[in-house]
Length: 335
Image 1 (cartoon, helix red, strand yellow):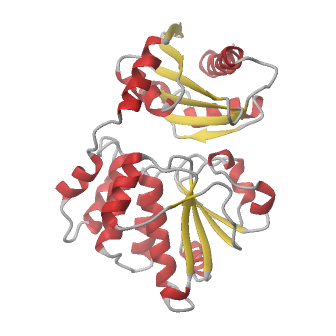
Image 2 (cartoon, one colour):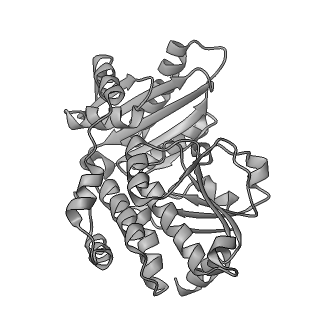
């Protein structure tokens, strides 16, 4: 790890860096990005105000916007941002999760900091720190601060704590190492404030999306497990999470975006089935069949794939769900 830290420092010393978050960047992504930006300022070749350090995403979640406002931090919302020589991909497991020109990206030094299962994305990277055993990317970044013997400012620590709590489901899946780094970050921080920042009431559009996804849900049995499939216009990830929370063992939710001619699939599962089938590996496999990009965690994953223009929306949804179920069946029972 010591060698990796020294390599990372060299990239952080650069004067022109873009920290790029995934689509609809969540608190883990933005918390990790502002942490990395702070580290870059700590290793400046010039005075901080002279460095060109930007955080960018094509969109951020409503919860992330609220946290950023509280921390007085900014994420530039832009599609196809101008790419400097040094680009950090933060909390991102697939190139399809960021809106960039892939050819232009290949001309940059790409550094990946992530906690998802490794995918083909690492082929784009000059350097990467990927630790699937970490519960969040913010946990990785917090440990980088500690390894470098730098104690981050309070607002950065709050951002990192928000990301850790968000990705651990308010510590439900936290590990001993998670509590250890939380303890290190907590000096002069109100834990109640962190919880408050994460306790935003669900957006009405999200609640409606959940209800519609549940109303469209179809159920099937596979090797003793209850599999739910559905579709949504938006919020497909949280729709899948909701369907599992009300009883399904696995939920696949598809969103077909006509404007982008793109299909997005989110899958969520219970821990019991994730011990048999890693959802991130499953989505990576399905993505290759669909000529897309996918990946994620053992219990939560997703993919993006092109929409076959010859197919209607309904046909496209049915087609990709069929591939998901067939691939799951092969993984579960070896058909």
